[in-house]
Image (cartoon, rainbow, N blue to C red; front, top):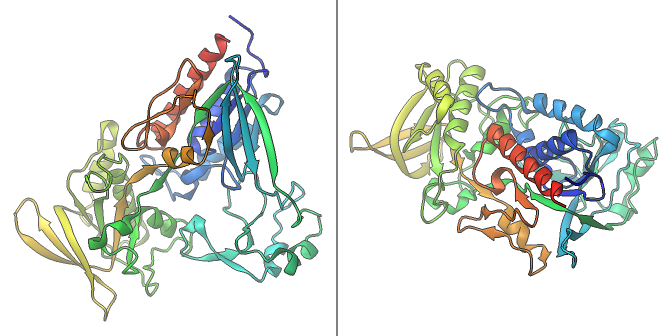
Length: 432
Protein backbone atom coordinates (compact mmCIF):
# COMPACT_ATOMS: atom_id res chain seq x y z
CA UNK A 1 0.00 0.00 0.00
CA UNK A 2 1.41 3.38 -1.01
CA UNK A 3 2.07 6.07 1.55
CA UNK A 4 -0.74 8.61 1.95
CA UNK A 5 0.55 12.17 1.87
CA UNK A 6 -0.32 15.70 0.81
CA UNK A 7 0.94 15.16 -2.71
CA UNK A 8 -2.57 13.88 -3.52
CA UNK A 9 -4.97 16.41 -1.96
CA UNK A 10 -8.75 16.14 -1.99
CA UNK A 11 -11.20 18.72 -3.31
CA UNK A 12 -14.63 18.99 -1.66
CA UNK A 13 -17.14 21.15 -3.50
CA UNK A 14 -19.57 22.49 -0.91
CA UNK A 15 -18.91 23.60 2.67
CA UNK A 16 -22.17 22.52 4.28
CA UNK A 17 -22.64 19.82 6.90
CA UNK A 18 -21.72 16.98 4.52
CA UNK A 19 -18.66 18.68 3.06
CA UNK A 20 -17.25 19.65 6.45
CA UNK A 21 -17.94 16.20 7.91
CA UNK A 22 -16.19 14.48 5.00
CA UNK A 23 -13.17 16.76 5.33
CA UNK A 24 -12.86 16.06 9.04
CA UNK A 25 -13.22 12.31 8.60
CA UNK A 26 -10.45 12.30 5.97
CA UNK A 27 -7.96 14.52 7.80
CA UNK A 28 -8.47 12.84 11.16
CA UNK A 29 -7.86 9.41 9.62
CA UNK A 30 -4.87 10.19 7.38
CA UNK A 31 -2.34 12.97 6.80
CA UNK A 32 -4.13 14.46 3.83
CA UNK A 33 -4.70 18.02 2.58
CA UNK A 34 -8.34 18.87 1.85
CA UNK A 35 -9.59 21.94 0.03
CA UNK A 36 -13.21 22.98 0.58
CA UNK A 37 -14.73 25.30 -2.04
CA UNK A 38 -17.82 27.14 -0.82
CA UNK A 39 -19.92 29.71 -2.71
CA UNK A 40 -20.98 31.57 0.41
CA UNK A 41 -18.63 33.66 2.55
CA UNK A 42 -18.94 31.16 5.41
CA UNK A 43 -19.22 27.41 5.90
CA UNK A 44 -22.00 25.44 7.58
CA UNK A 45 -24.67 25.36 4.90
CA UNK A 46 -28.42 25.26 5.45
CA UNK A 47 -28.12 23.48 8.78
CA UNK A 48 -27.04 26.82 10.31
CA UNK A 49 -30.34 28.34 9.20
CA UNK A 50 -32.37 25.89 11.24
CA UNK A 51 -33.72 26.71 14.68
CA UNK A 52 -33.29 23.09 15.81
CA UNK A 53 -32.92 19.72 14.16
CA UNK A 54 -34.68 16.49 14.99
CA UNK A 55 -34.99 14.17 16.77
CA UNK A 56 -33.27 15.69 19.84
CA UNK A 57 -34.23 19.25 18.87
CA UNK A 58 -30.69 20.53 19.34
CA UNK A 59 -29.68 23.98 18.03
CA UNK A 60 -27.39 23.62 14.97
CA UNK A 61 -24.58 25.79 16.34
CA UNK A 62 -24.10 23.24 19.13
CA UNK A 63 -22.84 20.55 16.75
CA UNK A 64 -21.24 23.15 14.48
CA UNK A 65 -19.05 24.46 17.31
CA UNK A 66 -17.75 20.94 17.83
CA UNK A 67 -16.85 20.74 14.15
CA UNK A 68 -15.12 24.14 14.17
CA UNK A 69 -13.08 23.02 17.18
CA UNK A 70 -12.09 19.88 15.25
CA UNK A 71 -11.17 22.04 12.25
CA UNK A 72 -8.92 24.30 14.35
CA UNK A 73 -7.11 21.29 15.77
CA UNK A 74 -6.65 19.74 12.33
CA UNK A 75 -3.12 18.39 11.81
CA UNK A 76 -0.89 21.06 10.23
CA UNK A 77 -3.95 22.99 9.07
CA UNK A 78 -4.81 20.23 6.64
CA UNK A 79 -8.25 21.72 5.89
CA UNK A 80 -8.10 24.80 3.67
CA UNK A 81 -11.26 26.84 3.01
CA UNK A 82 -11.86 28.78 -0.18
CA UNK A 83 -15.03 30.72 0.64
CA UNK A 84 -16.87 33.02 -1.78
CA UNK A 85 -15.48 30.71 -4.45
CA UNK A 86 -16.67 28.57 -7.33
CA UNK A 87 -15.07 25.82 -9.37
CA UNK A 88 -14.84 26.91 -13.01
CA UNK A 89 -12.98 24.05 -14.68
CA UNK A 90 -12.15 20.42 -13.98
CA UNK A 91 -9.71 18.68 -16.33
CA UNK A 92 -8.32 15.19 -16.14
CA UNK A 93 -4.54 14.83 -15.85
CA UNK A 94 -3.06 13.17 -18.92
CA UNK A 95 -1.24 10.61 -16.78
CA UNK A 96 -4.50 9.67 -15.04
CA UNK A 97 -3.23 10.63 -11.56
CA UNK A 98 -5.90 13.16 -10.76
CA UNK A 99 -7.46 16.42 -11.86
CA UNK A 100 -6.49 19.99 -12.57
CA UNK A 101 -9.06 22.34 -11.08
CA UNK A 102 -9.53 26.06 -11.71
CA UNK A 103 -11.26 28.03 -8.93
CA UNK A 104 -12.43 31.63 -9.01
CA UNK A 105 -12.56 33.39 -5.64
CA UNK A 106 -14.43 36.67 -5.22
CA UNK A 107 -12.52 39.63 -3.75
CA UNK A 108 -11.84 39.11 -0.04
CA UNK A 109 -12.77 42.58 1.16
CA UNK A 110 -12.49 41.60 4.83
CA UNK A 111 -9.23 40.10 6.13
CA UNK A 112 -8.40 38.20 9.29
CA UNK A 113 -7.80 41.41 11.25
CA UNK A 114 -11.60 41.66 11.68
CA UNK A 115 -12.60 41.56 15.36
CA UNK A 116 -16.34 41.53 14.64
CA UNK A 117 -16.73 44.82 16.54
CA UNK A 118 -19.54 45.96 14.23
CA UNK A 119 -18.37 49.56 13.79
CA UNK A 120 -18.35 49.15 10.01
CA UNK A 121 -22.02 48.18 9.87
CA UNK A 122 -22.98 51.12 12.08
CA UNK A 123 -21.80 53.62 9.47
CA UNK A 124 -22.92 51.70 6.35
CA UNK A 125 -25.76 53.62 4.61
CA UNK A 126 -26.92 50.75 2.34
CA UNK A 127 -29.43 48.04 3.20
CA UNK A 128 -29.76 44.60 1.61
CA UNK A 129 -32.30 41.74 1.88
CA UNK A 130 -31.09 39.25 4.48
CA UNK A 131 -30.83 35.99 2.54
CA UNK A 132 -29.89 34.10 5.72
CA UNK A 133 -33.41 34.91 6.97
CA UNK A 134 -34.92 34.24 3.52
CA UNK A 135 -35.37 37.98 2.90
CA UNK A 136 -37.73 38.47 5.85
CA UNK A 137 -35.59 41.36 7.15
CA UNK A 138 -32.54 43.37 6.07
CA UNK A 139 -28.91 43.90 6.99
CA UNK A 140 -26.37 46.51 5.99
CA UNK A 141 -24.29 45.94 2.85
CA UNK A 142 -21.42 45.01 5.18
CA UNK A 143 -22.73 42.43 7.60
CA UNK A 144 -22.30 39.27 9.69
CA UNK A 145 -24.17 36.44 7.97
CA UNK A 146 -24.89 34.62 11.25
CA UNK A 147 -23.78 34.47 14.88
CA UNK A 148 -22.00 31.19 14.21
CA UNK A 149 -20.20 32.36 11.06
CA UNK A 150 -16.91 30.59 10.32
CA UNK A 151 -14.52 32.10 9.39
CA UNK A 152 -15.66 34.63 12.00
CA UNK A 153 -15.66 37.98 10.21
CA UNK A 154 -17.90 40.41 8.37
CA UNK A 155 -18.59 40.18 4.66
CA UNK A 156 -19.54 42.63 1.91
CA UNK A 157 -22.43 42.24 -0.52
CA UNK A 158 -21.13 43.44 -3.88
CA UNK A 159 -24.66 43.97 -5.18
CA UNK A 160 -25.44 46.67 -2.63
CA UNK A 161 -22.13 48.22 -1.51
CA UNK A 162 -21.30 51.54 -3.23
CA UNK A 163 -17.53 50.86 -2.92
CA UNK A 164 -15.50 53.88 -4.08
CA UNK A 165 -18.50 56.21 -3.78
CA UNK A 166 -18.71 55.55 -0.04
CA UNK A 167 -15.93 53.70 1.86
CA UNK A 168 -17.34 54.79 5.23
CA UNK A 169 -16.73 51.29 6.55
CA UNK A 170 -13.02 51.48 5.73
CA UNK A 171 -12.68 54.72 7.69
CA UNK A 172 -14.60 53.30 10.67
CA UNK A 173 -12.41 50.19 10.96
CA UNK A 174 -9.59 50.65 13.49
CA UNK A 175 -7.91 47.38 12.60
CA UNK A 176 -7.24 47.71 8.89
CA UNK A 177 -9.52 44.78 8.21
CA UNK A 178 -11.37 46.27 5.21
CA UNK A 179 -10.03 46.77 1.68
CA UNK A 180 -12.75 47.63 -0.81
CA UNK A 181 -10.14 47.63 -3.60
CA UNK A 182 -9.50 43.89 -3.23
CA UNK A 183 -9.52 41.87 -6.46
CA UNK A 184 -10.72 38.39 -7.31
CA UNK A 185 -8.27 35.51 -7.42
CA UNK A 186 -7.80 32.54 -9.73
CA UNK A 187 -6.55 29.45 -7.93
CA UNK A 188 -5.37 26.29 -9.67
CA UNK A 189 -5.05 22.99 -7.87
CA UNK A 190 -4.04 19.47 -8.71
CA UNK A 191 -6.16 17.00 -6.72
CA UNK A 192 -6.44 13.25 -6.60
CA UNK A 193 -10.10 13.03 -5.53
CA UNK A 194 -13.25 15.14 -5.70
CA UNK A 195 -16.29 14.98 -3.44
CA UNK A 196 -19.43 16.77 -4.56
CA UNK A 197 -21.25 17.95 -1.43
CA UNK A 198 -23.25 20.67 -3.14
CA UNK A 199 -26.38 20.49 -0.96
CA UNK A 200 -29.89 21.56 -1.82
CA UNK A 201 -32.36 24.39 -2.15
CA UNK A 202 -36.08 24.51 -1.24
CA UNK A 203 -38.38 23.82 -4.15
CA UNK A 204 -39.76 27.00 -5.73
CA UNK A 205 -43.27 26.67 -4.29
CA UNK A 206 -44.50 29.77 -6.12
CA UNK A 207 -44.92 27.31 -9.00
CA UNK A 208 -47.78 25.78 -6.98
CA UNK A 209 -50.09 28.67 -7.86
CA UNK A 210 -53.08 27.17 -6.04
CA UNK A 211 -51.28 27.45 -2.68
CA UNK A 212 -50.67 31.19 -2.87
CA UNK A 213 -46.98 31.53 -1.98
CA UNK A 214 -45.73 34.90 -3.21
CA UNK A 215 -49.31 36.10 -3.52
CA UNK A 216 -50.42 36.00 0.12
CA UNK A 217 -47.93 37.26 2.71
CA UNK A 218 -49.05 34.80 5.34
CA UNK A 219 -48.20 31.76 3.24
CA UNK A 220 -44.59 30.89 4.08
CA UNK A 221 -42.29 27.89 3.63
CA UNK A 222 -40.85 25.47 6.15
CA UNK A 223 -37.38 27.00 5.88
CA UNK A 224 -38.84 30.44 6.63
CA UNK A 225 -40.59 28.96 9.66
CA UNK A 226 -37.21 27.82 10.98
CA UNK A 227 -35.97 31.40 10.90
CA UNK A 228 -39.14 32.79 12.51
CA UNK A 229 -38.66 30.39 15.42
CA UNK A 230 -34.93 31.08 15.79
CA UNK A 231 -33.81 33.44 18.55
CA UNK A 232 -31.43 35.10 16.07
CA UNK A 233 -34.12 35.27 13.38
CA UNK A 234 -36.06 38.25 12.02
CA UNK A 235 -38.59 38.25 14.90
CA UNK A 236 -36.16 37.28 17.70
CA UNK A 237 -37.80 33.89 18.07
CA UNK A 238 -41.43 35.02 18.22
CA UNK A 239 -43.60 33.27 15.65
CA UNK A 240 -45.29 36.26 14.05
CA UNK A 241 -47.03 36.27 10.70
CA UNK A 242 -45.47 38.50 8.03
CA UNK A 243 -48.48 40.64 7.10
CA UNK A 244 -49.03 42.36 10.45
CA UNK A 245 -46.60 40.81 12.99
CA UNK A 246 -49.51 39.21 14.79
CA UNK A 247 -48.63 36.33 17.12
CA UNK A 248 -50.31 33.27 15.63
CA UNK A 249 -52.05 30.39 17.35
CA UNK A 250 -53.83 28.72 14.44
CA UNK A 251 -51.25 27.59 11.86
CA UNK A 252 -51.82 25.10 9.04
CA UNK A 253 -48.88 22.95 7.91
CA UNK A 254 -49.29 21.56 4.38
CA UNK A 255 -47.20 18.52 3.46
CA UNK A 256 -45.73 17.55 0.08
CA UNK A 257 -45.59 21.10 -1.31
CA UNK A 258 -44.08 20.10 -4.64
CA UNK A 259 -42.86 16.65 -3.58
CA UNK A 260 -44.45 13.42 -4.84
CA UNK A 261 -45.92 15.35 -7.73
CA UNK A 262 -45.09 14.33 -11.31
CA UNK A 263 -45.40 17.96 -12.43
CA UNK A 264 -42.90 19.18 -9.84
CA UNK A 265 -40.71 16.85 -7.70
CA UNK A 266 -41.76 13.23 -8.34
CA UNK A 267 -39.85 11.90 -5.33
CA UNK A 268 -40.40 12.09 -1.56
CA UNK A 269 -38.09 14.71 -0.05
CA UNK A 270 -37.58 12.60 3.09
CA UNK A 271 -37.42 15.37 5.70
CA UNK A 272 -40.67 17.30 5.23
CA UNK A 273 -42.91 15.31 7.58
CA UNK A 274 -40.35 15.42 10.38
CA UNK A 275 -39.77 19.13 9.79
CA UNK A 276 -43.47 19.93 10.09
CA UNK A 277 -43.79 17.84 13.25
CA UNK A 278 -40.93 19.68 14.93
CA UNK A 279 -42.27 23.06 13.78
CA UNK A 280 -45.69 22.25 15.24
CA UNK A 281 -43.83 21.54 18.49
CA UNK A 282 -41.99 24.89 18.17
CA UNK A 283 -45.34 26.63 18.02
CA UNK A 284 -46.70 24.73 21.01
CA UNK A 285 -43.57 25.54 23.02
CA UNK A 286 -43.50 29.23 22.22
CA UNK A 287 -47.28 29.82 22.23
CA UNK A 288 -48.95 27.40 24.69
CA UNK A 289 -52.44 28.49 23.58
CA UNK A 290 -51.73 27.47 19.99
CA UNK A 291 -53.36 24.62 18.10
CA UNK A 292 -51.54 23.78 14.83
CA UNK A 293 -53.03 21.49 12.19
CA UNK A 294 -50.98 19.28 9.87
CA UNK A 295 -52.56 18.39 6.50
CA UNK A 296 -50.87 15.31 5.03
CA UNK A 297 -51.13 12.56 2.44
CA UNK A 298 -48.93 10.14 4.39
CA UNK A 299 -46.79 10.80 7.46
CA UNK A 300 -43.37 9.29 6.83
CA UNK A 301 -41.24 8.92 9.96
CA UNK A 302 -39.00 5.88 9.39
CA UNK A 303 -37.18 3.86 12.03
CA UNK A 304 -36.64 5.49 15.40
CA UNK A 305 -38.25 8.69 14.13
CA UNK A 306 -41.59 7.01 14.84
CA UNK A 307 -40.99 8.01 18.47
CA UNK A 308 -40.87 11.63 17.38
CA UNK A 309 -44.26 11.24 15.69
CA UNK A 310 -45.61 9.73 18.91
CA UNK A 311 -44.40 12.77 20.82
CA UNK A 312 -46.32 15.12 18.52
CA UNK A 313 -49.43 12.91 18.50
CA UNK A 314 -49.48 12.87 22.31
CA UNK A 315 -50.04 16.64 22.29
CA UNK A 316 -53.82 17.01 22.05
CA UNK A 317 -53.48 20.53 20.67
CA UNK A 318 -51.68 19.31 17.54
CA UNK A 319 -54.29 18.22 15.01
CA UNK A 320 -53.76 15.87 12.07
CA UNK A 321 -55.90 15.85 8.94
CA UNK A 322 -55.33 13.32 6.18
CA UNK A 323 -56.38 15.62 3.40
CA UNK A 324 -55.25 17.42 0.26
CA UNK A 325 -55.35 21.21 0.19
CA UNK A 326 -56.58 22.08 -3.28
CA UNK A 327 -56.64 25.85 -3.02
CA UNK A 328 -55.79 28.71 -0.66
CA UNK A 329 -57.48 32.10 -0.77
CA UNK A 330 -57.25 35.12 1.51
CA UNK A 331 -59.71 36.96 3.72
CA UNK A 332 -58.61 40.49 2.80
CA UNK A 333 -60.20 42.01 5.89
CA UNK A 334 -58.23 39.92 8.39
CA UNK A 335 -55.29 38.51 6.44
CA UNK A 336 -56.42 35.01 7.40
CA UNK A 337 -56.16 32.21 4.87
CA UNK A 338 -59.05 30.05 3.68
CA UNK A 339 -58.16 26.48 2.72
CA UNK A 340 -60.25 24.25 0.47
CA UNK A 341 -59.47 20.73 1.69
CA UNK A 342 -60.45 17.32 0.41
CA UNK A 343 -60.67 15.17 3.53
CA UNK A 344 -59.36 11.77 2.42
CA UNK A 345 -60.93 9.80 5.27
CA UNK A 346 -64.48 11.16 5.04
CA UNK A 347 -64.40 11.92 1.32
CA UNK A 348 -65.86 15.34 2.06
CA UNK A 349 -64.68 18.78 1.01
CA UNK A 350 -64.14 21.08 3.97
CA UNK A 351 -63.20 24.71 4.57
CA UNK A 352 -60.45 25.56 7.04
CA UNK A 353 -59.41 29.01 8.31
CA UNK A 354 -55.81 29.61 9.41
CA UNK A 355 -53.90 32.66 10.53
CA UNK A 356 -50.78 31.44 8.72
CA UNK A 357 -49.88 28.57 6.39
CA UNK A 358 -46.51 26.79 6.30
CA UNK A 359 -45.73 24.88 3.10
CA UNK A 360 -43.45 21.86 3.49
CA UNK A 361 -41.32 22.71 0.45
CA UNK A 362 -39.42 19.77 -0.99
CA UNK A 363 -35.65 19.44 -1.38
CA UNK A 364 -34.15 20.14 -4.79
CA UNK A 365 -30.49 19.14 -5.25
CA UNK A 366 -28.00 21.79 -6.38
CA UNK A 367 -25.65 19.40 -8.15
CA UNK A 368 -27.14 19.62 -11.65
CA UNK A 369 -27.18 23.44 -11.66
CA UNK A 370 -23.67 23.59 -10.23
CA UNK A 371 -22.29 21.19 -12.82
CA UNK A 372 -23.81 23.28 -15.61
CA UNK A 373 -21.59 26.19 -14.48
CA UNK A 374 -18.37 24.13 -14.56
CA UNK A 375 -16.38 23.40 -17.70
CA UNK A 376 -15.68 19.69 -17.32
CA UNK A 377 -13.30 17.57 -19.37
CA UNK A 378 -15.26 15.24 -21.63
CA UNK A 379 -13.35 12.25 -20.28
CA UNK A 380 -14.76 12.80 -16.80
CA UNK A 381 -17.90 10.80 -16.13
CA UNK A 382 -20.50 12.14 -13.67
CA UNK A 383 -23.91 10.50 -13.94
CA UNK A 384 -26.98 12.51 -12.93
CA UNK A 385 -30.41 10.87 -12.76
CA UNK A 386 -33.70 12.31 -13.98
CA UNK A 387 -34.30 13.99 -10.61
CA UNK A 388 -30.93 15.76 -10.52
CA UNK A 389 -29.05 13.48 -8.08
CA UNK A 390 -25.71 11.75 -8.64
CA UNK A 391 -26.59 8.08 -9.04
CA UNK A 392 -23.39 6.41 -10.25
CA UNK A 393 -20.16 7.47 -8.58
CA UNK A 394 -16.84 7.21 -10.39
CA UNK A 395 -14.90 5.05 -7.90
CA UNK A 396 -12.09 4.31 -10.34
CA UNK A 397 -11.64 8.00 -11.11
CA UNK A 398 -11.90 9.15 -7.49
CA UNK A 399 -15.11 11.16 -7.88
CA UNK A 400 -17.65 10.77 -5.07
CA UNK A 401 -20.67 12.52 -3.56
CA UNK A 402 -22.09 13.22 -0.13
CA UNK A 403 -25.32 14.54 1.37
CA UNK A 404 -28.20 15.69 -0.80
CA UNK A 405 -26.06 15.48 -3.92
CA UNK A 406 -26.84 11.73 -3.65
CA UNK A 407 -30.51 11.78 -2.53
CA UNK A 408 -32.76 13.56 0.01
CA UNK A 409 -31.30 13.19 3.51
CA UNK A 410 -31.68 14.65 6.98
CA UNK A 411 -28.75 16.00 9.02
CA UNK A 412 -27.92 12.69 10.66
CA UNK A 413 -27.95 10.71 7.42
CA UNK A 414 -25.94 13.43 5.66
CA UNK A 415 -23.21 12.87 8.22
CA UNK A 416 -23.26 9.15 7.48
CA UNK A 417 -23.00 9.74 3.73
CA UNK A 418 -20.03 12.06 4.38
CA UNK A 419 -18.28 9.26 6.28
CA UNK A 420 -18.94 6.93 3.36
CA UNK A 421 -17.43 9.42 0.92
CA UNK A 422 -14.40 9.92 3.17
CA UNK A 423 -13.77 6.17 3.33
CA UNK A 424 -14.04 5.94 -0.46
CA UNK A 425 -11.42 8.68 -0.81
CA UNK A 426 -9.04 6.93 1.60
CA UNK A 427 -9.44 3.60 -0.21
CA UNK A 428 -8.91 5.25 -3.61
CA UNK A 429 -5.78 7.04 -2.39
CA UNK A 430 -4.37 3.77 -1.13
CA UNK A 431 -4.30 2.54 -4.73
CA UNK A 432 -2.41 5.55 -6.11
